[in-house]
Structure formats: C-alpha cells, structure tokens
Length: 153
Image 1 (cartoon, helix red, strand yellow):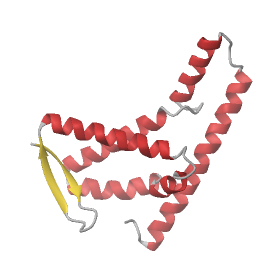
Image 2 (tube, rainbow, N blue to C red):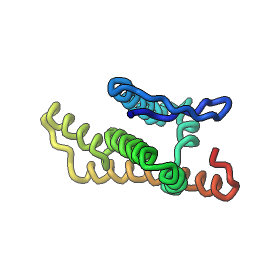
Image 3 (spheres, one colour):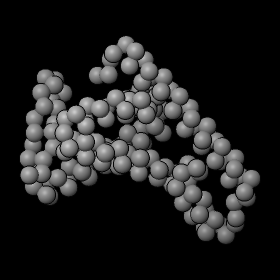
Image 4 (cartoon, rainbow, N blue to C red):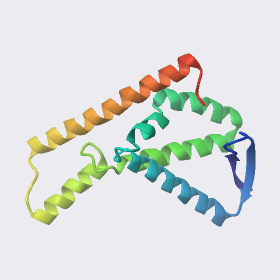
C-alpha cells in the first residue's frame, strides 16, 4: 500500500494517508514545488532570513535521520527521497560552482558567441562558494544551538 504521513499543524497528531499511485505522484510533485518555493525564498529579501532559519545543516539532517530510520524502512526511504530531491533542486541554482551555474554560462556563451574567460569563471565560482559557505556556517550555528538548547521543533 502506498501512503504517506501528515502531521496536523495545531495538534501534532500524525495521520497516515493511503494513496493511489496517481495520488502519490501528485504528492511527490507537490513536495518538489514546495522545495522550489523554499529555494526561491532565498532570493527574496523579504523571506530569505526566514528560509535560512527554517533550513538545516548536516547536523540537523543527522538528527532527523535518526528519527526517520528508527521509524522504519518506509520512513527512511521517504527521508532519503526528500534529501535527494532537495539536493537536486539546489544543484540547479544558477550559481557557478553548481550545475545550474554551468548551464547559465553555457547558454550565455552560445547566445552571445563569446567565451567566458577562465579567470571570470574562477571569480564567479569563488563568489558562489563564499555564498554557500556563509549559508553553511549560519545553518550549522543554528543547528548547534538547537542541539544544545533542545529545541528541534
């Protein structure tokens, strides 16, 4: 039986919803849409701080994975799928060290018939890496504070 669990936001009660294959695919695509919205929130000054605050680093992923793997095989597979989708979408961002950034550079080069110099690529990649390292440090700090103070909620 295909299904997924939903937690009620007010009561915290978890309900299992059994779904047809079509409903499961729809739910999967809805999740992908939510991840895309969250990633887009990083580029909106009004929502960027909240998006970063709601995100987690490898520390948070490790803590959450323990719970998912203890819950059973289906939950562990769902968690791995969520991580995979999230990483895949992040990799499509148009930032040079990522595949999306490389795609944008390739489209630019084809459209303008000009080559981007290696020096420019290096600077763009350094800027992108600095951005990601900044996000990582902020999220790692948040996760350590959550772990120390016990508020993973």
